[in-house]
Structures are given as structure tokens and as C-alpha cells.
Length: 473
Image (cartoon, rainbow, N blue to C red; front, side, top):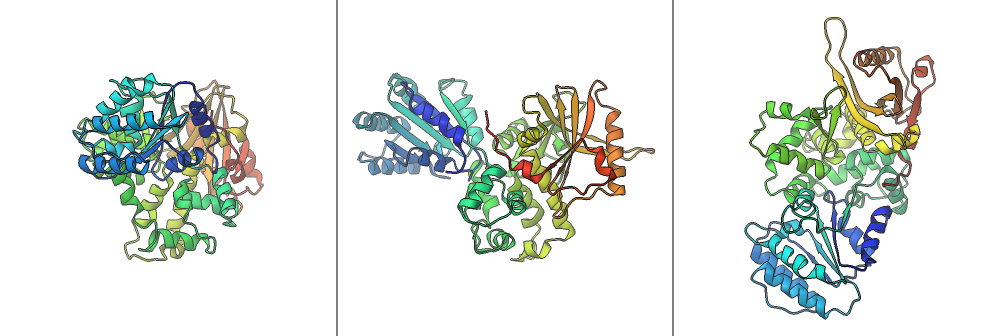
């Protein structure tokens, strides 16, 4: 198993506890949650079950009956979830395992309307399992917002009952590199980064890469060929996560057109109804890893900006959605063209934003508290506007202004780019905290050509730094 070291340590610690444990494992669809649990426990469970997508109560209970039968516990189809959990109690009592590990995958799909599922789960755990010492209930689900709101932040009977929370994150670049080596993909770091800019660190997507083909061929075959394994992934992605995906997709489409992101008020200004559900939708998208919420420098914390950061979703809107002629080699035909180059710049920035911890390591400030924000100012009659997508506002009295640049060759700072850089810095200094020093940081995909202009940067970070290992604490 690639990575997941800290996550595995947490779940095994829960397994070794002398008391019953209620564990939640959550994360974006296709990120490898089920694989993580199964591999950790070597595919051996006292009981394993998975909810069914878009299936009513009767179908869910029939499937439950089938899972019971698979584990050697022949029962009638339960009529209610209370009856189903009573059957689970009988199975646990009959088990000879010292530790009864119960793995229920895709639990959000089991909570169908008016099914009474949450109440039955509450009764099973509060009234029975938690009173024992040998039960380990592992709950998994791609609908991250459901797991958090219905289980982790439950305000009723299940409040405070979850004992261990484990979030499975997409692979970092370091983990993508390990996977590429394991799969014998023979990819250089620049290719691994470009692949991550398309697919993100989603293991399921990477598993389809054919080592006999180039990266461009793989992308064409997977995403642009109608027979490709990931051709219709976008529609499946949102329909599997949300019962009513349309409002979520509308917001994603809006944010996909805005590089910096949008405030809540700007989203409403684009015709999205503020009917009491918008806050929840934005929170759901954030919890599922599609967008990030961050602060703009110089504004109060309640002036939040929402930005699309999911690499695959960004790729879909910039390329797959624009493939109106259904060109099966759309990717290969656009490499090197302006649309490709513009996407590379934006996608690389998103890749950097997903590796903030590695950037801090490269700067030597992992022990320094630092806020992550961005900044933008409009132009006027005298001065052009300016925008900085990544600012590290550090508690050691330094502000890092980070310039993220993607090129396939060594990056050269030209006189024109240098003038823009000076304007950015000058305009930022107008609003910056005067007690702090301002450093310019270049985060370049390739090494930078040394010239007089480069001296204005206090530090140059290259792609190799983004591949550094990072231990989540």
C-alpha cells in the first residue's frame, strides 16, 4: 500500500484498544478508502457490507440479507433497519473472533428517506455495541458531508460517539512517484507532475495508466475516447456524492471560470439562489475536497473566497467539456497551443496549493505559524491592477509573496515579467503590514535561468521540493 502510514497507525491503535471503537473513514470518491481498510485488515472482517447507490429501503435490506448470508449467517430479509441491526448483534455474539471488526462501506447510501437508519444505528451502538469491549465498527463513505454531519458532528443520540476519525487524502506528488515506480510507468518527475495536474492524486485514476503508452496517449484514451474507463467520470462523480447534484455542479462551473475564486456574494450575484442552502452546498464541496475556502489578505476572516482546487474537475472544465467535436485525440492535438499553456499555468498553481506543507518545508518554516491567503487589487488611471495567488503571512514577521510559474524548459525572467513583478510588490506594499518584511518567492516547475532579475527573489523553489515527503500530524 502506497502511503497511508499515519492513517494506518491510527486505525490499528483503535483496533488494539481494550474498548469497543466507532471509526469513521472518509474522503473524496475514488481516493482509496475501501482499499485502505481492506488492506489494513487483510480483507478479514467479522462482517462486511456496502450500501447500494440509488437504491430504496427494500433493495438495501435485501442486500443486507445477502451480506449476512455471505458471512455464514442465514436470515430472513429484515423489514426495518432495527431488525437488521438485531441480526448483526446475533452475528457478533456468534463470532469466535477476539476482536469483532465490522466494516460498513458507503453507509451514506443506506440512509434513504424515511428509512429510520440513523435511529437504528444509534440504538445498535449506544444501546448494545458500546457496552461491549470487543466490537470495532468501521464506517466508510464518499459522501464526506454526510459522514461529518450525521456521524462526527451529530447533535442527537450519536453525539460524541465516534472514537476515531480518519480522512483519506489524495496522493501527494511523493506518493504519486512511488505509485509510478510500483506500476513501472517509467515517468520523470515533470511527467508525474503533469499527470497529477490532470488526475490529481486519485489512486483509482492512476490505476488505469498503461505503461506501454505515453502520458498523452493515456490521457486521450482514458478521458476523450468514448470507450475510455474515465470518459463519463464527471457525471458519476457528483451524482454518487449528492442526491441532488445540479446545484453543486452549477457552483463548480462558476468557480471553474474564476482563477482566484469567488466570494459568497459574488456567487449569489451570478444567479445562484441564496435560499438557505448555499452555505451548506459550499461546505459540502469543501469537505469533499473540490474547493478550498481561504482568506483574502487585508480583509476580515469572514470575507472568505471559495476556489476550485480539484485537479480533475478543473481539467474537465478546461478540456473535456470543450471537446465539442468529440476528438478522440483532443489532448494530443492541443499540446503546446495557447489553451494548453494557459491550463498548465493554472493547474500548476493548484498543484502548488495542494502542497503548501512541502513549500513551507523548502522555506524552512514548518515550525512557524503562517496564514495562507491571496490578494488582488484593481487597476486605476495611474497604476495597473495586481494579483498574488499565494501569500504566506508568517508569525516571524515575514510575508512571503509566492510566484508560481510552469514551464517545460528553464524559466527565464524577462524584462516585461520583471516590470509586472515590481508592480505587484509595490502595490502590495501599499496595504502590507509595515512591521513585516516582504519576501519574493519563486516556485518554478523548472530551474530558473540566473540573470539580474532573479536576485529580487529571496528563494527559488523547484518542482523537486514539491516531491518532498511530508508527515501529517
